[in-house]
Image (cartoon, rainbow, N blue to C red):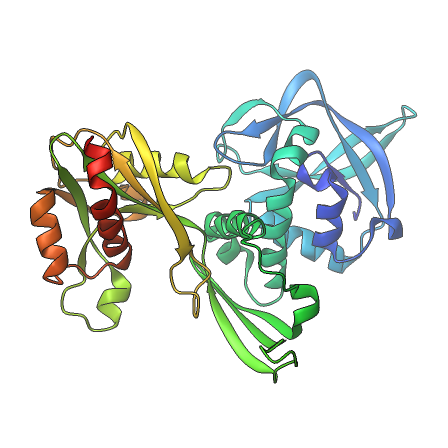
Length: 371
């Protein structure tokens, strides 16, 4: 059977067409309902699930005319969410019934969390979901669905960061649609990070188009970095954890003293992420945040954009069990008097660039914060 009933995000035409790689006008699409079922939001996620529920009806689309390739692409995309097809009978608008298959979640995998609204999802999540799906589908035929499922969270984090990047303007009059020519674009690798490659030309300072260059970028989400500071005690808090990249470059000291830091989750503001990370990593409740600027951490190699903050609050205790076990974090903290902290900065005892940036910002604003 090649007829499917969609009750969730794939009712959104742009997403379904992206997954299929062709327009819906080439298929037969009808409004339909699945009786004795209801569609609920998934707790903590931006997609829905369907559950048996006597007397309810799940609204959706019956789509007919899929090719074997269509079904492979759909199974690849939905497989990333751990959904499998189940045969059902759906009711059409004229009261007739039709056989169709429906993507059902693995039992017990997700927790329902209130009725789900397609329009509510479109307003809040469609744009980031489309960007994430573009990355996922770029690996169709090259990477299995299990790998995509394992990296679903970082893919969405990168999509959320891309949306934020599109709004990042400072007044440069140049236009990338006219001043940058992409000869080829390849998504080369997907994991916690992504890697994308370009053959690209860009307009040079003399007004001419430059030669074609091969460039690559480590694709990351956006991050927050927060230096907790107690203006009453005039002290800062630092966290220490093992950093694999520092180890990989043969640095003999891969345990790094840093500010609190973490990725911005889809749907979060940088400020929300800053407060959350302070709690998760250092078990510190911050009172307020002082924005200390934002910048790309290494624009020649990485897409990571960092929002810098000094977080004000009372610092009274240190811990040696910070971080989330689910993320493999093993974090301890220390509180340093401001003078001791700055002496260590001047003695080059820290190797974390955001920490040095925030130390210099704090030095310029400390009197105001203490006042």
